[in-house]
Amino acid sequence: MRQDPYKVIVWAPGYLGSAVIKEVLKRPEFELVGVLAYSDRKNGMDVGEMLGIEPVGVRMTTDQQAIFDMKADCVIHCGTNMMDDTPRNREVVSLLESGKNVVASPNYHFPQLRGAAFVRMLEDACRKGGVSLYGTGINPGWLTERMAPLLTSFTNEIDYVRAQEYFNLSHVDLSMLKACTIGMEMERARRIIHKIEEGAGKPFYYPAVAQAVHVLGHDLERIDVESRFTPAREDVYLSASGVTIRKGDVACWEHTWTGIVGGKPFFYLDEIFFVDGYSPVEVRGDHYRVIVEGKPASVSMQMDVVASVEHNLLRRGDDTTTAGYYATAVILMQAVPIACSAKPGIVYPENFAHYSSDYRKLHRS
Image (tube, rainbow, N blue to C red; front, side, top):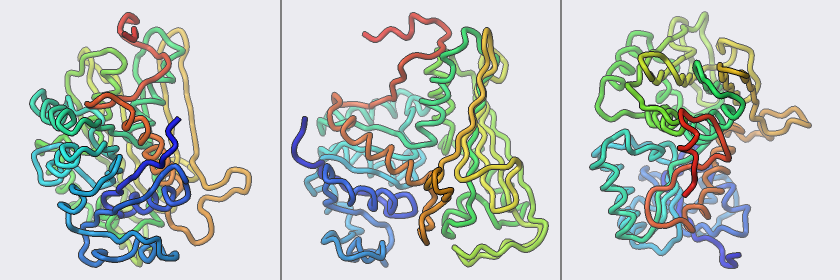
């Protein structure tokens, strides 16, 4: 077993990145050596000051070249990245070429969706740096690429698989609310989401659906997308962000990605973002559901991620980070040794056994 700690850099210390940093600082097998921030306000700030704790001796920087030149085993990349030819995508390529493994969320789960040239670019960067790239997290990652396929272990024929994530945004910051259209005027939200869906970047959960279909041994024909918005019935004040959602503006956004196989819906992924009182079903904490409809057996699973089951806590104290985001942070940390010990290239999740269109495809060479 390795004795030295993994030297890690956290890229983008936002809502998720801050959760990663807090957990990394608690574990002796990790050493935080750098943090890349996008905000000038954070440039030069000790990480502890950002987190509201004692100084930790690591100052954040906006200088990407300084990060590229820094010695580290792995970068935990928490920035949004659409897997296309954007500056943020080139950041990841540069990190790989500099000899750093990259564990990323929420992207690089199934880069094949972007075509052979895109995959080749990433693999070439991995080979040049002698490192690996691993896209993981709770969703995308654990829900669609690992848990949903695992629950198909009980069936030989599948009519459809449905994976769902319910996420309460009442306690997140303003940037997260905007990213999920919460508080926007209904028509503006529809225009923005339509523009994204029509774009060429295939963002958000397209790769998750594509990879799940691939894991289950089928050829994906296309992915259909659909959004539904629920307006606020009255003004809603969110104390964590200081935002008031006006009556009639978006209080819940339900977004469905549907993977089509053989001309029929095969894999559904529902993302439901809402504020208190506007979830379409009763949930507690960060809530996940999977339905596998098939033969000879079908499966239904529901799961709540909370700070404590025994003590009935959604969050601990005045910490506004949800348990689901801490779970994502933990999954990213657990992926670091996997990435660091893998052969150079792209790393994909492994399941013990699950349904496949042809069980010979499950053979591990």
